[in-house]
Length: 126
Image 1 (tube, rainbow, N blue to C red):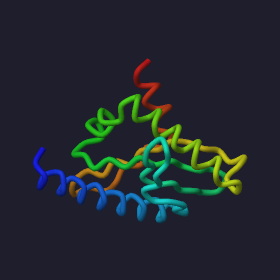
Image 2 (cartoon, rainbow, N blue to C red; image 1 turned 180 degrees about the vertical axis):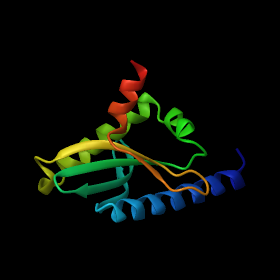
Image 3 (tube, one colour; image 1 turned 90 degrees about the vertical axis):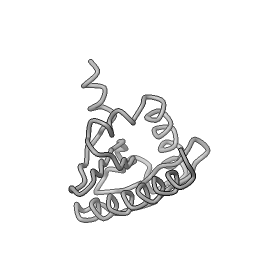
């Protein structure tokens, strides 16, 4: 991939993350962190609503299917480990439910929020 293509992909990704954050805020979530770096990798968004903390991976893809394909088991594990690290360092989040969500941002269509995406992916594979 050329440098220009990588830059364009990075811009699309950042735009998708901003749109996903706005989408979550409209749904009543509070954004706790964006692009949170941890020793295990980056979490695109950390959001909270009521007693639930959502670790949100954002994928700017044409379809939901291609976004789900891009979310490989190794990436799921990385995000889960990064989320556990983040929650452990924020005592106010202790005792809250934590889940991993996916927001798919297709071109020219509204975002699609898949709540508890990891469990849903496991259900699809069995």
